[in-house]
Amino acid sequence: MVNKVVVKINGVEYTLMGEDTEDYLFSIANYVDKKVKEILTSNPKHNTTSSAVLTALTVTDEMFKLKRQMENIKKSTVIPNERLKEVEEKYRALYEEYKKLVEENSVLKESMNEIQQKEKENVEYFNKLKEEYDNKIKEYEALLRENAYLRERNEQAEVELKETKEMLNSMKEQLLESQIELVRLKKDLKDFKELQTKKRSV
Image (cartoon, rainbow, N blue to C red):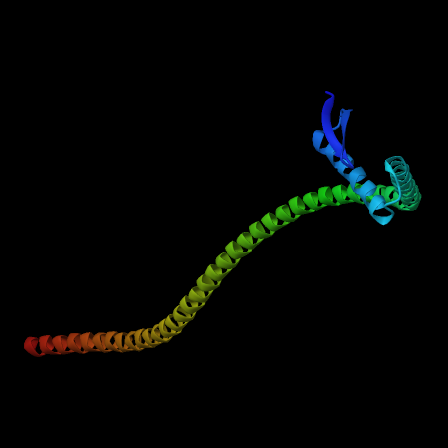
């Protein structure tokens, strides 16, 4: 789209046409108008033509200087651009390394989770074994106490058995003596009866 504007430069109207915006066309016209007025103010002897030429020379000089500055800037950016490419390549290499490290870290985290899970299971198994061990110790201590009690009872029973055996032996001896005494008494009784019989018969 072609834009058309009417501008004033040093009091004279001009029609400008271009694809740029109206604001842009007005801004360049104002810039040229300002330069013309500066030249006329600095030297009133100049006529419109000479002031226009001088303005064109001034603007062209500014344009050339800007062009040289741009070329210098482009030249000065060659090394930084090369450096930027090197940095970008290093960045890509570092990024690839970073992705590998992230993947390795993910694998390590997974392995760590597995190790922690196994450690948890081992702790639970150890606690279970410890509980069983403590219960066995308690059972063993109970058996020791029971064994000590039974040993004491056994010793008491042995003493009682010994005393009983001694008492039985004593009773056997007494029984034997009683039997001997009984036999003797029976014999004496028999002898007495025979004696009485003889007496009666006499």
